Length: 368
Image (cartoon, rainbow, N blue to C red; front, top):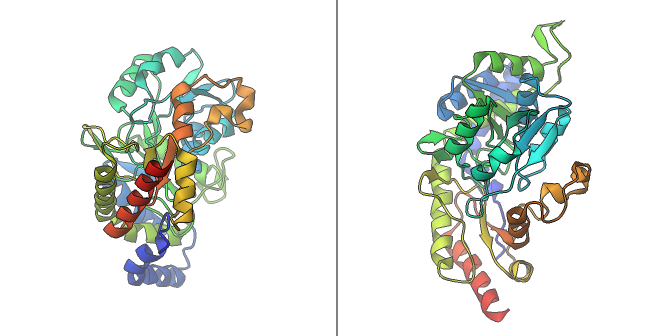
């Protein structure tokens, strides 16, 4: 039996009738870009996250980009983030002409280490982007406290954290803005690309709305040269349907994660830690193991898909070699990158599948 890393086919079969209704409504209205389906989703998602505003865009990368642009971050400025994340976090910074400045991650949560933040701040720092990685939020209180002391806005990269919580606050509700991706494999995924910004700042929300639509104030009137980063009507409708199921789907992920963790506790495999003040939604279930490559090959041979998120920290990527960082600059991120392995997890994954994945890994540990 093959065990996929993600099973979108089964997930979509569960809501197929609702999705067909969306297709019919969009075809009937011909509102293919923005329109009522997107407006409805923006309203629903803002209420879900607990913010006053939500602005839907075409990708999570665009969400990060447009928040920075709307805050007038640009050439000569610095933005602090982490090296252990998908490249889109840093790409958004370079897209506005600013320089990414990295701080190392916490060895337990894999998110930004707040104790290292102060030393990275300079007179050029214009924003801080903690990444809520794998479905667990960063330690926001000390990050916000440090940022507030310096008058620097905090932008949450919540692209992997739909429904995650920190001390009762949902991801995307604590910083000046939260940025989400709705790439198909995310906990809340579109049937294509999608993204959104959540915020309580009405002026910022309006600025992002203009940026996503050519800088327009109304049709054919443009306040500045913006971009085309609008959400499609079809994706807005699909996301509204799926949002109604998100909490249950997250609970199913957590149930699978609990089975994995029970199987790995006390073994050579280190399961991910869910910190006491957080609600982890397990976009990814990421273990650590000394013999990672051997174990991954073991899974592949058994017909089990796995992933690496992420094998090369951003400061060691060719794309960011110009920043001048060298190996050893961020030892925790580098060590983690060499030991992590992402296991199959998705809503509806069978307990038997989880048990088989765990069994294959533990057998690999005994043999190797």
